[in-house]
Image 1 (cartoon, rainbow, N blue to C red):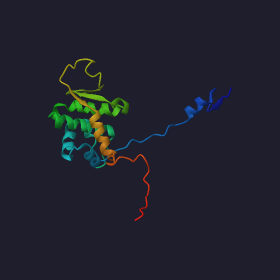
Image 2: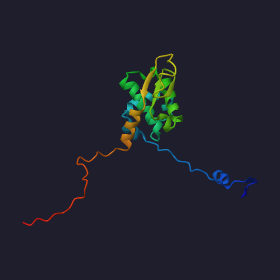
Image 3: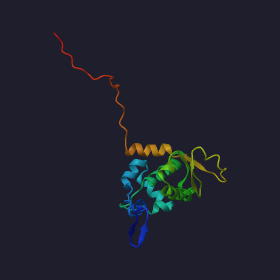
Image 4: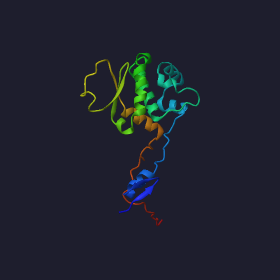
Length: 181
């Protein structure tokens, strides 16, 4: 049996020591500038300026040094869908949108995959696509937005996929042939 002692602590298993002694490097998430945010989400500067007046979470993201995470971009894309596609006035759902931004900040990528976000005038919640209707009936008017199309659109802007070549790959390598003429 091998034991390791360090700073008064003794571990009988060196693997436990290695796991506790190793520090995972802190990975800084990508932060997007205001110009990048507007390009990726399609939300104009005037619109964001107006939303900052009604949504407390966005009010904290002011000035030229403001930075946005991917969760913020997704929240802005969802808010844009609510306002543009569904015709909802931002003032009537500002508390729900504020909760939405906080919810997305706490969520991880796995919970967003295939999820649907439900926004009311005061709350927001994330649901799996197959379970959001079966859980419990909403007690107030609720707006449901599927996240997959919005995430795919943001990812397409960030990492565009090159179009497939129009000519199919040949099943055999090309070969040079001499003519006798």
